[in-house]
Image (cartoon, rainbow, N blue to C red):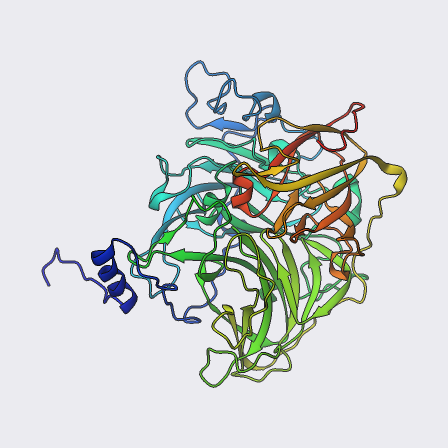
Length: 594
């Protein structure tokens, strides 16, 4: 081989078949998917944010009067180059960029991250890496998922995020736009730090996100545990998040302290340290010819991938000890709804030996909110943006046992599930992750508390308005009460009040995971009945099944200005199932169907 020769990997049969079909017909063959051997790579662990992106000081320091800046501001530009579309209502307006209550919650820690492109190989059998986007540090290291934050209530922080994405649209490998707005889902943040659809900014700019680490209303019952951060650029959320702009954010408090040996009275002592494992789950599709990550921006139903990806790896494995683990599962989207169930693996080391559940799943939290009491089940359904805290006890297994985490929800389009659960022994079930039991018995000081969080009830006397929202598909777009998203708020809410909202799915064949920013909500009624036990605490995503409705209550405290509600099937969100409302400190009219 000469010095300038290039080694070409052996082409598999699918690729050769596609070349033949292209030559004869101009179209790809009907190849089900690019075959990739499951469970051949270990589960990646994103780095701890304190180790890779924490800084001793931000230079220049935070400007509480304007949190968006250009690294090299244009001359004579009073907006520092952050006003992307002068004259367009609602597009990152300078008056909305002052940080609320900054002096009241001064940051005790600072972080600095850079959104940038990098090459990533999702599976060792892919012929080449894909150019994806992630979050990194000043040294040039970049990850997707981004660094995992582990923070504590009572210790405010600032996270500065630079936009260093490549120029051009579409972005590298054909999709994504190099403008960002990083949303910390669903922290109780002021809009200028929330990373909503108004606060996107261009390359060469940065935005300072101030997180007060303060529970809603100062109520300790309102603390959150598992959040995630992701891009929220309007019209391009699906593309930018699918391309890699996601990460985990964990918060601890007096009771859920992140220390399973915590001796303090009342400490929950859930599994911690190496046994507290975030799992960022998505589904991806790879081009059968180039083996690169691909996305279809023209499919408005929703986009489905063919391979489960966990923490950036296609169907990895995780070595586990014979004890309890806490898994923080988030589905990053864009459109697939997962139903997770475990199976014991047969002698081949890969396939499920039966359709029986290998172990119980103990649900201790939903959408970052710990439940009042744990719920035991053999499967759990998680839609895009939902999070579940799941404890699995591997103590009953023997060294060498293998357990697959499977997705049994049958789904053939982005519209939603078919309603069929696939047998785990069939080719229709999707392999997600394999647990491999190693070693002998180990000490396990962790526990599952009999009682965890108390629900902060919302009395009827606080309800200031009742509203109804109808989610539909009209005129080629996704609508809320017959309207598409624009950059203006549709209605106002008085700060300090609570409201009752009824969310209605007008369709009989679509599913919509609906997310409301600012505060957690509480389900009162789901489809005419009492919500199931795992949905009776607090949530920030309401999955509307076909023809379903959910009635919920929520408060609007602490922060002013504009927040969105949208479908978190991010394809639906981008086309344009989203609205804004505004929290104000004045009396407002109650618009029942805004």
